[in-house]
Image (spheres, rainbow, N blue to C red):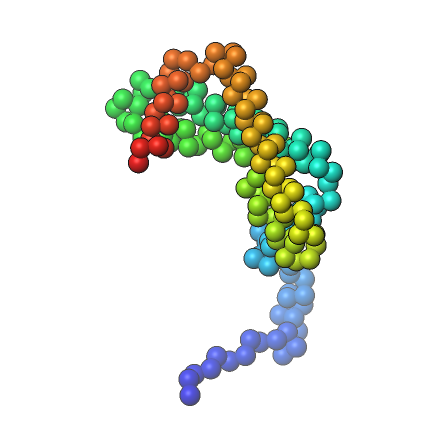
Amino acid sequence: QGSQLPPFPSTARAPEGLRARRATMPEVVSLCKGPKEAYEAFADKGAELCRKPLLKVFHQAVYAGIYIGFGGMLSLVIAGGLADVSKNNPTIQSFVFAALFPVNLLIIILTGGVLFTGVSAIVPAAVLERKAHWIHIPKLLAVSWIGNLIGCVIFALLVHCCDMNTGLTAEMAKKVIHKKCHR
């Protein structure tokens, strides 16, 4: 039949000195959760969101939408300002844009913002684990989507009113739009 590995030596059969050393070794602790623990935390986060008042979720969704706009504008302004540098190496501008955009996601995580994409994952997980009622899925999806949209529109209006989308920033915005729409 196939070769079998010998059983892992237990501490009961180990010499006295080795047993004492094993007993005093610290437990290995990982900061990363395994798949099961991560999913359970995911579902718990969804259940926590379902218990929050809708007005609070809406508020968190609006400022998350504003932060999305902020991250986009930050990327456009800085990467757009690299137009002269990127003439010889156009990947620098793309790299800087891509490196700066996630800043908004970090801000959203740190401030507890609610994004539609997160709600579409954590609330169904909570429902599947019977930690929340299914009625929360459409309710929270609608509230988070509308809140994110309103936040993005507010930020876009502020950018427009302050004339921030001009010059190199506007050129970078046109470049990004062209790249995204004409593939």
